[in-house]
Image 1 (tube, rainbow, N blue to C red):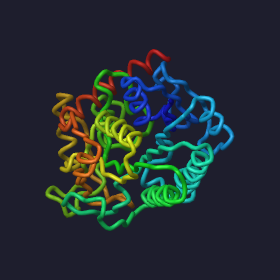
Image 2: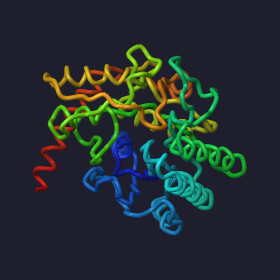
Image 3: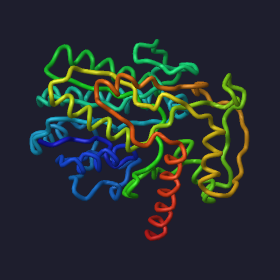
Image 4: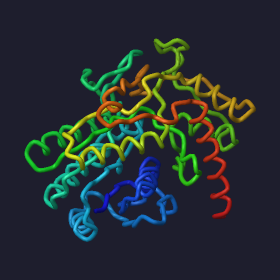
Length: 331
């Protein structure tokens, strides 16, 4: 059987492809390459360039490759952008996911794993948030993902499909073997931005808000290494194939770091200072979001291996240097 990874040329998706291949799975990737890169797809995986809303294309991929599971990463992920252009997010993240679910049901795919987000909780506070907490997205991005979760829930009740929705907290780092990492130009991920600034790719970086109700006034987030997140998806797939029920689970380390703590970690890893400017808050940013990940640990048997901010930063910085070399080689 084969696993279809949508968005498999992107940041998290490309790590997922390597995780599956390392585990001996057959993988086909669907990506329209709007933000992903063909070179980021492992050569052992089959790449199809196209859109998740193309029913006939998806149906053919499922039938031709005997797909028994879909891991769905394709979508838009920038919170401020979703505030500025909400309808684009509801189309790309919600409407197209509905079409993909419909195609999966029509073609008899029994297992579906969905890339969700901690943004479904909104401002959760300093205490680790559980999956049964109040759902109150503060951005169209978070709401677009929550609506997709609801569609999966309802589809699984009506049809023979079971799913796992993993609510990511702040994904960071890169493949420790240097095979892939966050490569999108203009990315807004904090650790990525700080590493780019340290290496001189940006003249400075900006901290958005210093008056939040947190210990140092800057936003706090639960940073999870992308390789640990990929492992959680692989375990979720194993669980579904073994007959596990549908599940929604958080993926984080259950403790947070502030923006200023992350910047200090990058300074330590780089060994030199770089310019940081303080600015106003951005629309849609919550003060603090930290996971209670007990459910993922118990239901998936997930034991994170890289729960260390300095290690996450070191892997991200190493990838940023590799990416510089790749870009130089391409001219």
